[in-house]
Length: 595
Image 1 (cartoon, helix red, strand yellow):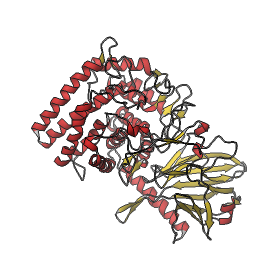
Image 2 (cartoon, one colour; image 1 turned 60 degrees about the horizontal axis):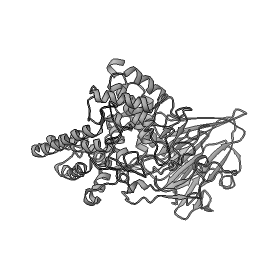
Image 3 (cartoon, helix red, strand yellow; image 1 turned 90 degrees about the horizontal axis):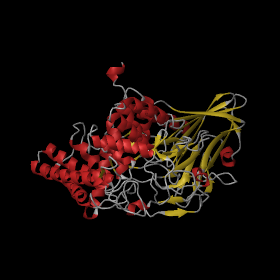
Image 4 (cartoon, helix red, strand yellow; image 1 turned 120 degrees about the vertical axis):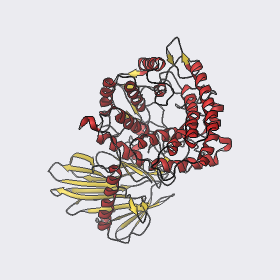
């Protein structure tokens, strides 16, 4: 079984990953970047049973089925035994409107119902603290168990027989039971009624949210699932958007490419905001703008980092921990991310582009203002100053710096969008100044990053290698789709980086050798480029192939093994799901064509 055959529940405060048999194997509480109280995902190779999980098991197990309730983040897992009995587990994190605000507690609700025969089940709740190092102390009352850990205390409140839960004793499930795991607070109402109400309201919330999405005619289920998952990766309290919910899932087997992705990269967040905007879900952009405003307010001399904590923390000290062996034993497990110390100049374009729609979208309650434009101009000045200077690039090289073409183009994009915004605001002198800067930068990039001998733009000024980010030159507005230079670049990238049906991000050695697995979003970028240059049938066929590589519940991680199709890398990966939405929107038949 693919270990990344995982489903996701959450509520834009925190999330949890659940395997195919209904076992919660990863959940950080009380936030995405918190201590993983369920950490079995990174402790799966010891001879003994892994630590840090929450399981509902059926005796004499035969098979399992899993699905989401349509158009929601509410998961249903059905476990069957060999005698024909079955139990249904409904998992969700409550999220709904209450008292003119969103109720999104750090709470996991699990509802157990016998649906065939007399299933005999066992409830096993084994949270851990301090990244698998700290076993909690247990206390209990008549209907609850308290798990006391060094950093927090969780309370499980249930109407199931408590002694059976405490001792992990199997029992016959004749009636439905509910289990509510959350903060150490007294639950002063009927457990069953509360669980039922929470489920009903959460289902209604998600269906209402989906109802207002502007989805393409084709691949609707795939797009809806991707959109919901992107929303789950939004830390709504601050507006931050995390890259993934996990840390240290390696990009390839035994590669050492194990990173902590539970933070906000403005680059990734821009693409998430862009994808959700395509679907009409603009609220996430407005929330993200609040996050960006805080970043700009604390930026020293206009300097932005490539990654921040979800509370806008600047220091994300990277360290290895020894208390968890890692995914399939493939350590190290890292927390924090050294990229916060990197120079990655594309960040200025990411921030400006993420906010550009604020100035053009009449639906928004808080449109862009001249004051916001003034703050963005400071970022534009940085972009114009840094566009032709070396940096670590979007691939975050750790041991060398170059003038990366993608970073330069993103800096150009910052100035280009500022010129357009100035026109929109009726500020002609500002528009001319930014257009002049953008044109000057465009000419310099074309001179330095175009390799005439190879007939392609290259990954860095004066270089010969290509990388997959060059496929975005049209998407970013830098080149027209029919520009011979873009056609040559697409041809060069596919020749050098395509592996079967998948695309590498680059094939030159880095700090860890040559990449082996395909970077999933790069294949989507390739699909979009093919569609843009008129190779639409090829693009559709490749898109269908990539859709087939999603896991059983319709989700994607960061990387794919091009030989086996196995998913690798942190999960669920927002970049990959953005690629799915963007490609589906571009390739789908229109509603008028299809109906």
